[in-house]
Amino acid sequence: MNNSWINFSTLATISSEEYLSSKPFEYYSIMNVFKEEKLKELVKELEAYEYYIEDHDLYQFKRTHDFKNTSSSLIKEFRNEIFSDTFVTEMERITGLSLLRDKGDLHSLKLEQTHYLLCHDDQVQDRAVAFIINLSQDWDEEDGGILELFESDSSGNPRSVAKRITPEFNQFNFFTVSSKSFHQISEVVSESKSRLSISGWLYKRDRQGEGL
Amino acid sequence: MINKAYLGDELQKEMQDFFNENVFLQLNEFLDKEHNTFRKALLTSTNFKKVYNPLLESKSVLNLKEEFSIDILRFVEYFKSKEFIAFLEDVVEFSLQVRDVSIVSYEQKDFKLLSDLDTGAQEDYLEIIYDLSDTWNESYGGIQTYTTKEEEILHLEPQHNTLTILYKPEEVMKYLKYINSRSKDKKILRVEMKFDIVEVEN
Image (cartoon, rainbow over all chains, first blue to last red; front, side, top):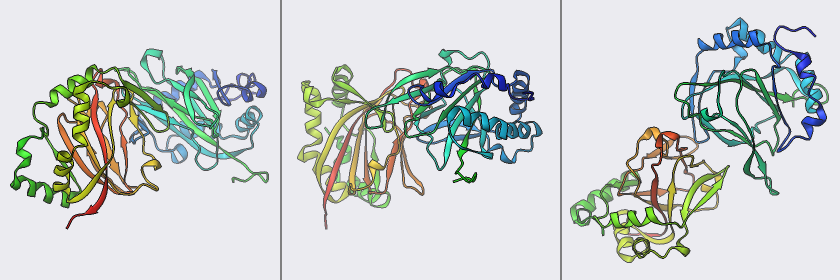
């Protein structure tokens, strides 16, 4: 399938069985789902974008407002692709979930030196699938900013990190939001690099095709 | 042990007035020079145990049951002593009873998140923190914030040899900001105490 943003042939290589049996919870990390040149254009667009500092007990980072009302035509185009019927249908095939079209959250995060996001499960309202598209180039494990997935104990509490994912340019990570989806981003320790990503959530759809 | 400057009648009245008005009070240079003995003993103790709950906190707590350092135990007993409690009672004008005394260390990657465990069934209490931290900088993180759902009430920065007295109502929660890599090997080291308020003195 031809698409200006998404390599559907790459996405098609993910089997639902593999996704549903992944540990410590249902997640997948895959490279080159998006067209490299388009993502590079997106990075340039984000360089001029306004980010706000978010500083709470759980996290410290910079983020944009949701792209729902963006004035950037490029970001608008990208957002339309992410919440398109074609892309969401593929995500439904992989995750086994019924998901809303044309509606979801999408924004960009920028983590600079000392920024972090501590352990949480993303369970808010009807979020069904969380996704992160990494846009940082030449990132090393020593720079920090690692996406860490927790395994939970028999009581359902996160205990220890079971999987660590170092950001790479054009890396697409996604997972089913559940009572097990505990994750965090370790502190960025690089003095010069920023961990740039686009992230968001797809939402549950009920049987009549409406949001819950 | 208490710095004699804090034992005079005139300053006591000032402390009472400040506490009444602000429901907290910080006393710098609180203990006399003996506090250095306490700090040295704590820094060499091997009985700190890591406590890590990803959804709640990361810290190290001194296991007092396995601690045999006379210098440490002497100070712990002092914070439970009639002399110390009488000092507090004079300042806050409540009758107090010790609920808990623990010695806690926070270093790089440690934190405490806001938690409903700080609210709920627990009644109001008096929180006392005696600080023995390294020289600290706000950019390291480690600031303790007291907040309600509506507003932040107090930011507590680590400050060596400082006693903080805080009236903690049930609805107030607290968090300790994640300590980042800029802190390098510096530590927050402190005695954390809870006192039950038995009755309000007339």
